[in-house]
Length: 273
Image 1: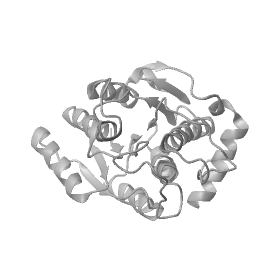
Image 2 (image 1 turned 180 degrees about the horizontal axis):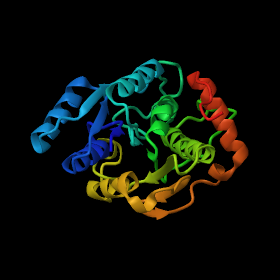
Image 3 (image 1 turned 180 degrees about the vertical axis):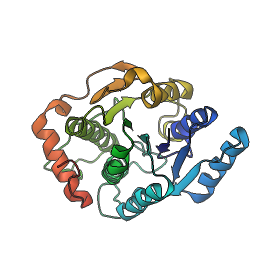
Image 4 (image 1 turned 60 degrees about the vertical axis):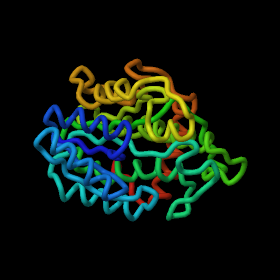
């Protein structure tokens, strides 16, 4: 089982990689910083005897996202699970003010949503050849409805709103993709892994924790590996419990509009047609 994890040099992504590597799973790890990525891979080799493959990209740049997908395709002819984990929070250590990506998109929407959306499209043929495969989106209970009249939040910006919109977009596009793919081929599920885990994002902006990192790892690991979830698709989980996302996620018109707009923003044809 080959597993690709974005944002694997810190927090949940790294801890999940450590658990999967200890179980002998072949991994492909993504990071933005080459030095941190190499250090992570070396640490896993020291701990397990096997060095995971690595791929570097800044997810705030869609050209780098495309190259990242190409790297993954070059590294493996089989991809069983894609864990879309990388992201930035509502404030520090990035910024509480509005920023834009290399492509001019609102930064949280670009990194937390569009990058994973484009990676999914680019890797979908490989995932479909690896049937049964899984896509796991690390989302959040912190959600905000998508405003299609101001998708890049040029008015009334707040980091919390931007973060919540990006996370709901993840869930909505996951629901939409799940409805377009046979469940026996590729499943698509999203989860809130835990609340205020001791990660760099939480400690920088929130300053305190609630749940342990181990809890977030366990709930994410379940979606990656649990055979009881084979064929389960189009769901949103709060830890291990299936729950409802924001009401907008269940509006088929809104989901289709987000899908269409997202394809335009990343410049990609619809691979499900």
